[in-house]
Image (cartoon, rainbow, N blue to C red; front, top):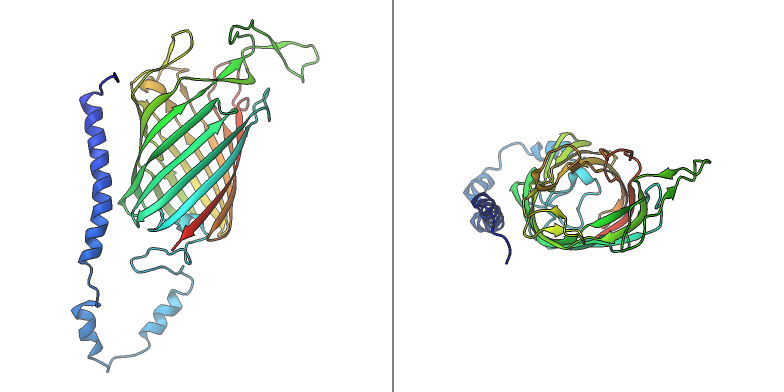
Length: 346
């Protein structure tokens, strides 16, 4: 039987689900309340033909450089922005986005020795509410996850709420000098060291599958553009609420049912409309234990090129932990991923 959550965690889940319900159904009620004929003010304005006729021309001149949008400032597929920072946080209603990724380990001693695949999807149920889901993997499927949930606007195009169920397992890196699967320890040699010295305890490029966990991921995706081409992004995931423990093969608990803290922050820029550059870092504090050595700080850089509204092509380079334990260095553990995104719909 799954361990019970504390009263505070149950309250957090209820609030998150309630906010998602309000964002979805609130949009529909606003649409029903909107006038369909332009309103009495518009009808009254049509009766007076004596006013100046050139005001519309001035507005057209001021707006000629603005992207074409539908009523209410929402995009259609034909007018969906090429510029990443002009795209809404929640994908537009009836538009589907699919992302296919292929990655490989680039660590010092395991470069190109393993691969990972991912397939993720987003679908706009309403202009301020979307469902999300996908499959991710790495290290020859030793690490993998399935997730599904929703993201809805709390303040449109500024901050959302994101809640997803996540069944996942992490890969366990083999370290030089450690024994695994009943095999005796073996040293790893640094090819750059002509003395043949053994490296301890660096990952040797091999991974074992960890234990499977079920979690709920809660986030508040946030974006604030303080310049048209520069924005702050944060909190794609804030915390992960675990429902079971993850143990090693010898019974050592690696991750308790205590929630994990996972805040992130980064900066995004579009030097030209078709090119997006993003750098973001995440703080991973397992079981909210902030003791030194118990947390990780992965940092990711992403380059994305968008030739049109329907297609994105990108590359992500991740340093898996820039605060590793000695004698590891921030650049020792790396991962590279190529991805393609495609959108289709109305």
